Image (cartoon, rainbow, N blue to C red; front, side, top):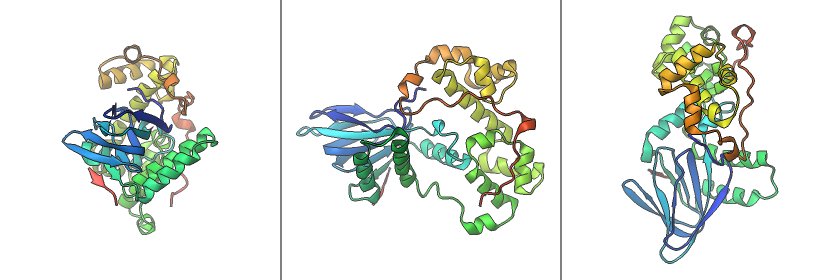
Length: 306
């Protein structure tokens, strides 16, 4: 999969009756900057007017069409949860996966009068003169506003309850993916104040898979991305994803994706880094060894919107 222009606001101008297909690599946020047109998707056609905002997951295929009488200018940016491993918590990543699995039911449409649509318009005007980091942060503000309900953390009352069931929810809402991947089952169980066996059972109930399976899937997904984003040696990629033995990494990768890491890289190309002008690849520092990990000591305290 190739991610292009992540968190970069771009524009596309369509002539009368012109069409633009929605990118499928990431979540897509589209605002009608001027003009009038239509969203054409599976099973529905929706009129879009100046100021309206449209949000769709990676699983939705469709396109925008300009009116037969006027041109239309679209502003759009892409948001890829896979590229936010150091920022999104494990629970937040799971929420995006669940929403994407809903397909067209996950589509959001906001009229120009909606507060989020107005903020999108303001941010589009604030883009000029801002440094790249600030521009990305402003677009992340839009993402957070759109999914405010789904990404709301546990209340203080819930966080104060010391049961293992409640604590694991709070933990997963605050741990980033990187922290989660570098934590052992013993550390997570100790944080939740329960036995390893009880923690494993709670984790299985929450995610439907074991802790080890979840960590393996996330490590291999990161490896798959790094293989096409960088020219680093396969051994370096394996080490960055927590694998000290290349043979183990190759075997797990082939079992999961049906091909070796080298075959994956050759099939998908190495030009992804040049397609990401706004977000460099993650550092290739090896994952810390188990004995050197810092223990978890601190406790973290289609829909139309109107």
